[in-house]
Amino acid sequence: MKKLLIAIVAIPLVLVLFVMLVIGGISTGIIGGNAPSNDARRDIPGGYLAMYQRSADACPGLPWAVVAAIGKVETNHGRLQAPGVTSGANFAGAAGPMQMGIGVGAAGDAFWRFAIDGDGDGRASPYDPADGSRCRPAPRRPTPSTPPSSSPSTSSASPTSGERPARTASTTAPG
Image (cartoon, rainbow, N blue to C red; front, side, top):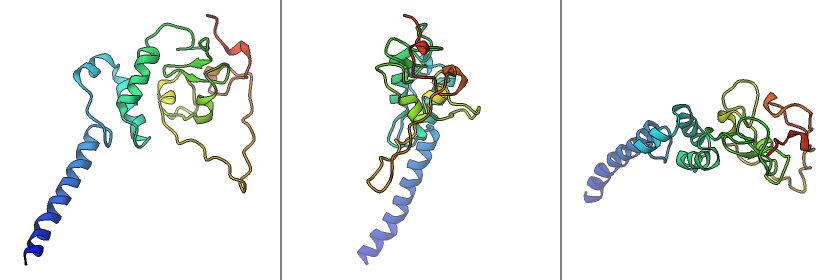
């Protein structure tokens, strides 16, 4: 009888707690994240804040605050006036507000390997904050039974065209 009484009380309590966690997570825009502080709301431009939250929603285990911290440190949420933020690349070959490598320097090729059209405009660009902050799982590593895919082709297109730029020094910005 005592076990039945405990079950009758515990089951609804667990369900209520579960619903509260889900609703609380959705209300902040991120499951497992916290609502932005007043300082964050003042510092992060509104469009960027919503974008950081959507990015975290798309990448389980990544809090929006981590995405925002990267944006703050790298380019002050896209406000930094420096090579590679809105065009070209910096000295290391990184570009855009999140300073992702575009394959022209030491920063590597992270943007093009994980590129996502985050805002649905039909192109992925490291200079578009919605594209540069989106999360995509790493591609599956080839196994002995799965041949590696051929390397992506390069083009001479400008990085802002949404196509992958050629891996040449001409895509780096001076400075």
